[in-house]
Length: 171
Image 1: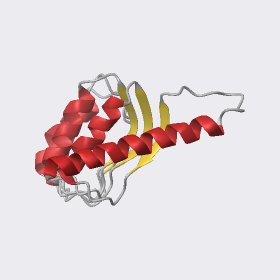
Image 2: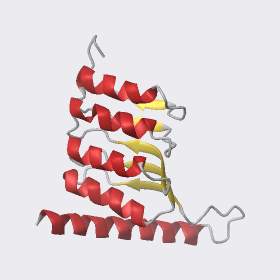
Image 3: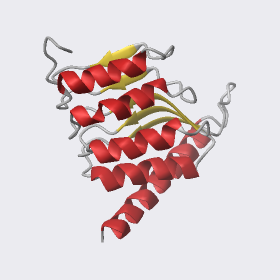
């Protein structure tokens, strides 16, 4: 049941990406500046109850569309937890086929355990993440310190949102 739900989410995300790319191609057909067909400006899945399985399905669907540059991916409020983020970060961090510029993970179920996955995501040399939103997650000091460890080797991230993450004096 969880697997079939995951497949349905993956198929839906693939369809959304395909339609967005087709719409973008139609809009720019007469444009003087023609962006590459493997660039998607925005994929906003905010407030859809994807959970961890759905989050994994999203990254799998993105990898199937590779090579792909995705400027904005919003997974805010999709009920992603630590396991979903860990799978997402591992998959994206291991590939050069999908480039993500801005990622919104606000308002999910991320805890201090997500610090390592966030660090892996921002320190992945194969990614060029410039913006990361993790506001309104229960990261706490431990999670933020974990994320900060990844920032040591990051040369691209220029915007980081940490509103309402339970940050205290230690973080």
